[in-house]
Length: 426
Picture 1 (cartoon, helix red, strand yellow):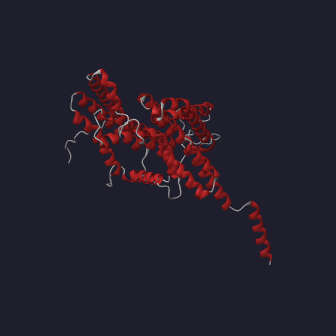
Picture 2 (cartoon, rainbow, N blue to C red):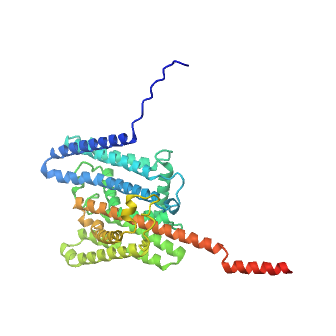
Picture 3 (cartoon, rainbow, N blue to C red):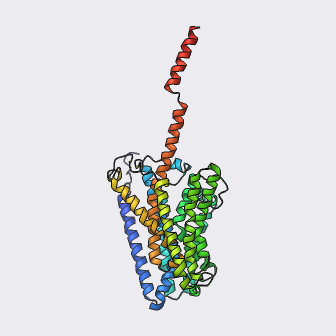
């Protein structure tokens, strides 16, 4: 109707403004968590402070490392999406697969929830609310497990089902091994320390040792000398070992046996370290520790060799860093010789830290072990680029070969043409 006033449309805030607002909220949340956590720790007596921090760190550090791995995986997918590496085909993903933005969204929620629960744990414990403090990690673990196993169509059901199905195939390699199977199993070997800490945490929750010092006895069921520690540490390597044997059964390729041998070299590193608590100190220093050191060197160098020679193909670093549209990253990374030196050097150094990461008798230096485990995830993060690129190169080479073999050669066309001419004369 003419003359009627049109209500003014309120403009939506710009994406840049929303992003800045979220950053401010994140920084404010981080400051509050740090302030409350620091004040809570300072309320405790000095003799119990380090012991309590070690316990709190045990419950929350594996989840923080999982969040870090999810963030890095999102970066991997973002780079692949910018390049010509078709990771969807490599992993045989459905059209509903998670994009890098959805991966980052999941990582953001985990990054927010875990420190918040840890801050609540510190605050409640320092103020004498022991039962409420003990419930914080238990509640967090229970919620995450429910979300992971939920059969309802929420929280990315198809992706969770894909992940759980792949985990089952890793634990029970009764079928032909696919690329996603051994790719995820390889990532799990980098997270063996995370799985070990998760087992320790769940053990204390089940035995009601959270927010107590009952676990302080090293020989207790959840103590630092438990036999479950090396068993959980070695489990990802055993899964990968049996995958290689299954691959050899299917393909008869000797390289599968050599790969199985590589994973078997981690077994003596893990169990010789755990043996320290079950032999006399003199016997450990004079006999077992030298064997443990030699085993660690063999495992590190063998794994480094396999990365360079088998998992990667450093002769063609073209697909990953050649983005579809020109960018600063392309100019910085594509065809640069420093990339080769960085990849080789960092991979060798971080491979050598495996001995520390896999050795349970060194886990009392929990901050150092946390840093080394985070660095191992960064090594695995860069490993993903070259491993997926190498697999994509193999797939495209195979497709090109099949297409060329299906097309008739020039000689075949000439022969067919001459035969047709001779036939037409008759």
